[in-house]
Length: 158
Image 1 (cartoon, one colour):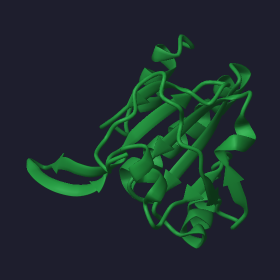
Image 2 (cartoon, one colour; image 1 turned 135 degrees about the vertical axis):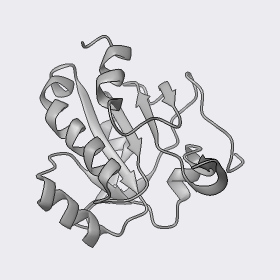
Image 3 (cartoon, rainbow, N blue to C red; image 1 turned 180 degrees about the horizontal axis):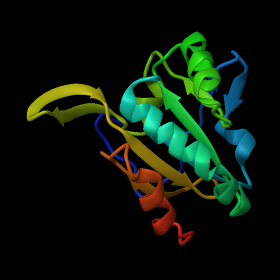
Image 4 (cartoon, rainbow, N blue to C red; image 1 turned 90 degrees about the horizontal axis):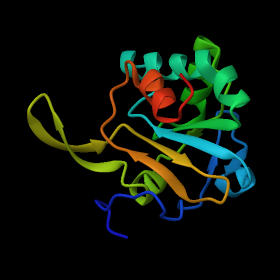
């Protein structure tokens, strides 16, 4: 799959194993049978990414009640993720992908527009993966603010 290819509903979700904030390996395969919200964000502890992570944290109960698990992925190393988790009391796994392999597998890294300029970087993206490991929703270039509320509407939760 090319770096710039995007996933579509019905595609198999690329499997992965990444370290979490504590350095423990987390595999997508371990969540088979559950619905997973996998989101990619540019950098821990930046204003937009903090807002988005806190929105997920604040809605985690409702998402869990609807049988969703949330996983966040960034290129940050586990030590920085641990600080982010502690600082903002985040209650779901944040995963480290410094080589951007998983970002690229999901089409969440590539050319994007930033303040009107074309740059290469992390594309803020969210994927909803069904219990069989297939992509249910592939949302690219999402906004940090209001994203969780919009996602809950798409999932029929609000």
